[in-house]
Amino acid sequence: MRRTHPALAVHGALSRGAFAVAALVSLAVLFAPGDDVPAAPPGVDKLVHLVLFAVLALSGRWAGVGARRLLVLLLVYAAASEVVQGLSPLERSASVADWVADAVGVLAGIAGWAFLERRARS
Image 1 (spheres, rainbow, N blue to C red):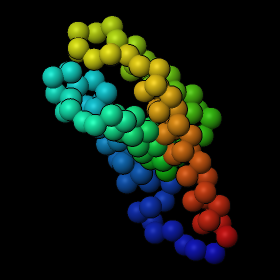
Image 2 (image 1 turned 60 degrees about the horizontal axis):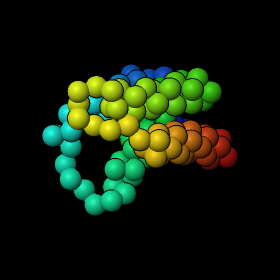
Image 3 (image 1 turned 60 degrees about the vertical axis):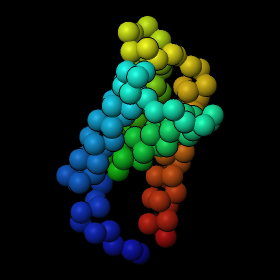
Image 4 (image 1 turned 180 degrees about the horizontal axis):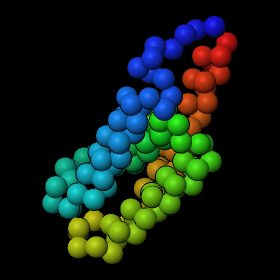
């Protein structure tokens, strides 16, 4: 059985810090005013959403948040971010497609963590 380095332990300070940084980055990305969002080719926006929420899910699981709780919290956060983008003066638009990309990212992150846990046990 493989031994995990203490710095990479679940619930450790590093894992909680990584989750906090991912959450702060998500706030900056999701709630930046429209003028601050760089132009990108079609589809890049969805990729950014997917990767952002995958990182949130992976780092959240590493920090010790339960999979079900994290799934619900991140899906609600994703939906709320789209509502805020659509209703606020940020000059951003709400998008169901962005929420779907967020959801796929959450599922990918949670599945990725489960894979890493199984691999570490074997």
